Image (cartoon, rainbow, N blue to C red; front, top):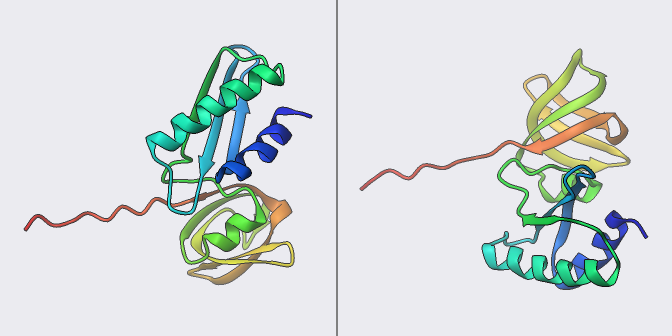
Length: 148
């Protein structure tokens, strides 16, 4: 079982979604990005870190350092379920092929169906095949409160 499969089978029973992970063979750094419907806090990261440290010892996963964190405000969208979950949010897509004469598309995510993502742009709703998306991220929305 590779590291991705190990993480994918371990985190959901703990109540977390594996958003992404990476490993640096040079430094031995393992980064794991997790999420859950109401968001991640420091205690969630600490809990998952403790669990993975023990799991990696049992499974003989070699690493020098482990980082567990939330995916951040500009969360990557990697699975079809992500494109459904975040429908209505603004996204930025980097494409592997031209769509509407562009390799970068920014707009409102309208969901995912039949292997394609729907994005509403100024040019209308575009249908973009999942296979044609190199990277997809949420566009951070920051709401500033006025001082009263």
